[in-house]
Length: 183
Image (cartoon, rainbow, N blue to C red; front, side):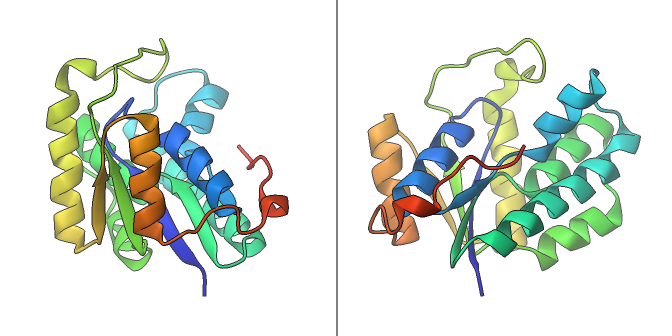
């Protein structure tokens, strides 16, 4: 049985930075955010009909890497982001995606705080002016999910310390397990 830890939160809160650092610290694999890859390959902003493809891609990526991981998998988001953003952008989310989120609820969610600078990327990050509002949507969904949540804030070092403590990871369990993730 693999333990899943998901780094989640609003746009530009350091999720990828924390997920990769935590995976390296713990000597395990990390799952990148599939939606980012999808949008880059599509070459355009997603539309509602893309939500199901994004969800299926996220699940497939998680499963492929879970099969290679030992006992811990770090995820840079999961279906929680798909649900939150689908509801925000389109006012709806396919029911099966919401069901899959409940069925696939992670063991721990690290909610990355908004106390880091906003860095627009010109492609996907477009909600800097409502980052706190989006963060509250993540909190609400995590509560509704009944998820175990630890908020991580502060400097990169403070976030890493809090994340490592929350996961119970002593650090560098097996440096040879670390490799670039697909995506």
